[in-house]
Image (cartoon, rainbow, N blue to C red; front, side, top):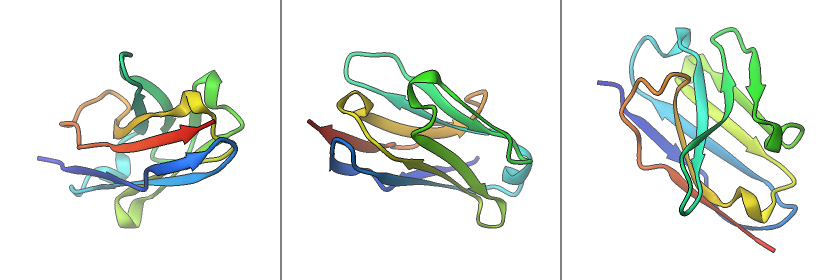
Length: 114
């Protein structure tokens, strides 16, 4: 069973930056498209960014130009660099495959103050 562990969240002022990390166990990580998701209070979990095994990326419109997803296959780790953060980015952030194939980790809380 693959285990996902997210880290790097915290409290930041609007306009600030954070870098999230997701460490995944499992030897097939490097061939699987991965994604970062977020769930704000009272809202459904949404996919915000994906990255293929080859490094091709895709983003939801609300984070384009501000967030960057990357991966280090040798470390079984996916990253989310978040710049120019806005209060509406406040959420618990999770990683998973692009098809939500694995059990969810505990997530990491990002709080952006205005």
